[in-house]
Image (cartoon, helix red, strand yellow):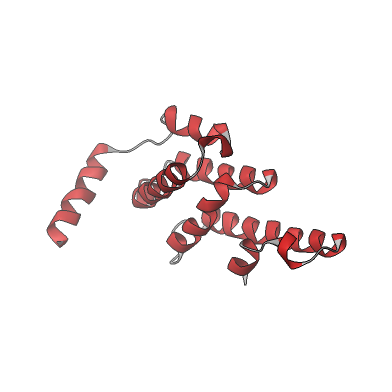
Length: 138
């Protein structure tokens, strides 16, 4: 249900302003739930599915949603937890896909600043161990 409300197009559903407002609140709430889930439980089984859903919202026309998703990305990328290294790389891949597919003017500039200022800190020894483990698994 959260995914359905996250992707809802309120203008296409109804012209009644009270219904549009209610659907917008449901949309904001569902995006908020996904963001909080990723922030509080980054090891969640379906984190990649959630990441793909909210990454598309980085270029949203709704400023509230865009700011919330941007903040979630920034906070997660700044976490100093080496166990999240693979997830951070997945986040960067999704961010790359979205930036490549959408006009850069649609994004909050702070997400681009986050990347350019190298807020993502990678422990080289941990990255090498993951790389070696990946090569051995294939």
